[in-house]
Length: 333
Length: 305
Image (tube, rainbow over all chains, first blue to last red; front, side, top):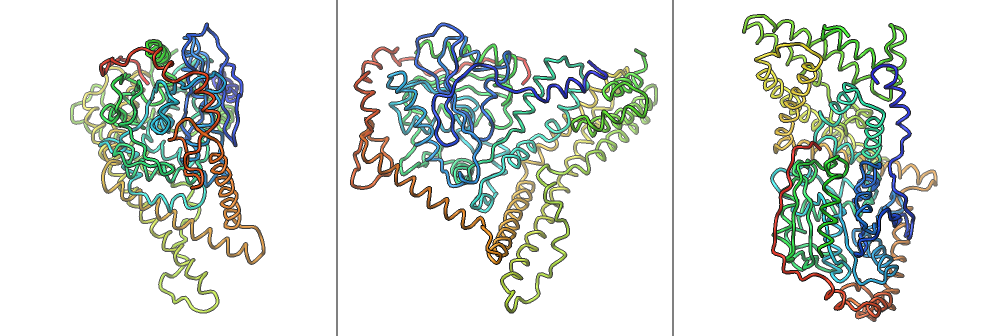
């Protein structure tokens, strides 16, 4: 591969598209699309699982390619998987609030699934910021969620090693957001600045210094696509998220209110599985571990993996262990 | 493949660039999707690493220490001009603060514009000041990284293979990230970063206001009026939704949003329908009892993220 082939391979891989499992759009609202994945194995018979991804990146990371797909692992276990694609907010979405995201968009998806399956409650998997949304939704609508799984989800935003939180706490967020949206590219640069040497230098050197085969190059390019495919953030929701969660830490302190209703984690009595990346530089493990002491559930399980934030979705080890852990946990509930 | 690691490295780099003689190697590199800077950096790094290894190998202990110092200084210099990724976009307006006098009195018909420009210039000055503080902290982190790296180089690798060059590079990155992480957590860094961003926000807000002013003069649509329209539209949407919620019953009182007072206990029909189909109690009974004690499992391993 070293030599004339590598550039050809990189160029060819530039056009690789992420996302591999067949799915169909089953509901839309504004820019949001709710997808249902086609089954690839006999049904486990459990309630459908709704994956709630973050707003700050694109959800296809959950189904990057055949051998790097958390969703594929869940489908193989017979789980009926739904995924929310929040879309790309534009200027018309600048006044969309967190309440809009939860009460309208997320609640709309849940209603759609419950109607389709004639069920009272579904299973929910919240990822990163989507995990925060899932916790809030479950606290506000306890009857609609049967089992809750959170993955690399921050709960306590004021833990000592949370660098992003330390940075954000001193920023004038109202002034930063103004009345507009927040550039996804600018946000991405902030994330890269958390580990600038590794994320802007070493990983490229690593790529060219090895002798990657076509498959590895394509994998690299798909991840690269995902990293830099950063939707702009709806201004109002972004402002609320930064102030209420990062600066005020209201969720952990029991002071969060959405649309005039208190979000009380102690009210969460449903079975919960918390998946934590022990080398997560975006969501330090302590920020996730805190969930256990804050919820009222007596059926709480935490699984800790020696993985980073992205590794939790796409590492080889994650493929082997994470979907299996989720399927196993759900099967017993 | 030759046994000389320097030649191995050069062959490797040449291979990346097309494995062709000079004249043909630059073209693919320049067009290689932004990889050229990394390849150039790798070449510079390899040359310095080779020099270090040659000086250190078989030399006296003081010579090895001196070589390590030179190598770590080289690495520090290589990264000295590195800027925080978000600062690049702001460099286009460099020097704006010097274009305006801060203390000239704002008088007459253009008073408002002058004040706005003065505020912009002031904000830009704060941006530059914050950037200088960040650059100093960055430099401090690099110095710390270089010191740590030099300490690791006290015993140079026995062979100067391509693999050893990689290990040296990785060691440098480790040192740099560790030093940066310590610096980035400090109060000084957080304050400088916040000032950089806050001043940037102020500068942008004043610039927007200035552009709005000129747009109004030319009767062009501006963001302010679009925002007004968007707000009105959202307000209508919210009222519609609230009215709809008010008309539709829901099975769960908690699902009722802040709705008109006329229908505070409204319920949504779809939820009621669901309840009729599968009673929650039955669904709950079918599930396993929740007696499972809290437990925390650890599933640690050695695989990398």
